[in-house]
Amino acid sequence: MKSIILPDIVAAGIYNAQITHKNKTITPIRKTTMFEIELPLDNGGISYINDTAHPITENTVICAKPGQSRHTKLPFKCYYIHIIVGEGDLFDLLSSLPDFFETADVKDIKETFTALCESYNNGSSKEEILTQSLLLNLIYTIDKKAESYKRAYQPKSSNRKVIEQTIQYIKNNISDELSLESLSERANFSPIYFHKLFKASTGRNLRSYIEEQRIKKAIVLLTSTAKTLTQIAYECGFSSQSYFSYAFKRKTGLTPREYAKKLQSKYEDVK
Image 1 (spheres, rainbow, N blue to C red):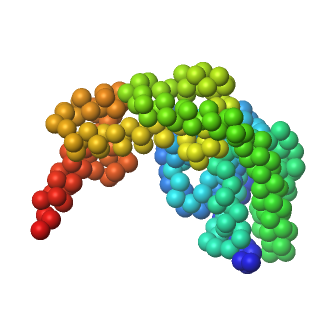
Image 2 (cartoon, rainbow, N blue to C red):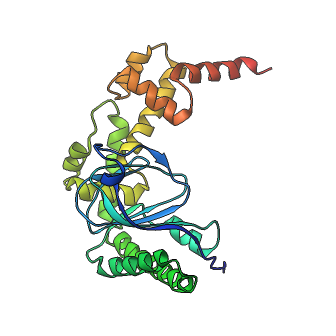
C-alpha cells in the first residue's frame, strides 16, 4: 500500500471571476500546475477543461488536474482549493476523479469547504492540523460522491451496444456534421444523457473523439492520394481548410503539409 502524503495547500477561499476579469465574458486559457477542486456557488456560465465543456451549476463539483487546459465562460463564483501532491494514494485518488460530476446534495461538501477556507485563512499554525483534516474529509466525501455518479452512468449492455453502433456510424459518415444533437437523437437519448454514456463507455469527449477520427482519415488521404487540402478537409468533415490545418497541427504538432513531407522524407531516407 502506498503512503498517504499530505498535500501542500497553495490557496483556498471564494473566487469570483467577474471581479478578477471585469468587463469580460470569458477568462483566458491557462495551463494548470496543481490539483484544483471547486464547488460553484451560483448557476450560469460554462467551465472548460481540455476539450470538455460543462455548464456551471451549484450541484457540480469540478476537479482539475495538473497539466490540463482551463478557461471559463462567465459568470463563475466558487469555493476553491488548490493543492500540490506528487505521489502516493492521495495523488492516485485525485487523479482518478472525474473533471466534472454532478451530485444531488452538496450540503456536506459546502459545509466542509466553508470550514476549510475559514481554517486555512485564519493563519494560525495551530489551525494546520484542522485544515489538513478538513481537506482529507473533503477529498474523501468528493470521492464517494464521484463513485456514486460513475455507477449511475455505468453503461448497461444495451447502452454499450448503442455506443458501439454510434462509433461505427461516426467512422462510416465522418464527412457528415455529426453533432451531439443529431447523434443523440439517432440513439434515442437526450443529448446530456447520451454524452455522459459516450464518455463513460469510451473515456473520451464526443467532440474530441470525432475530431481524432477525422484527423486519422486525413492522414490516410494525405499519404495515399493527391487530393488538395481543401478536398481533404471537406471529405473529413472539417468546416474549412483553415480549421482543418489548425486542428491537425494542434493534434500532431505539424501542419498537414509538414506532416506529409515528414513521412515522405522518412521513406526516402531508408537505405
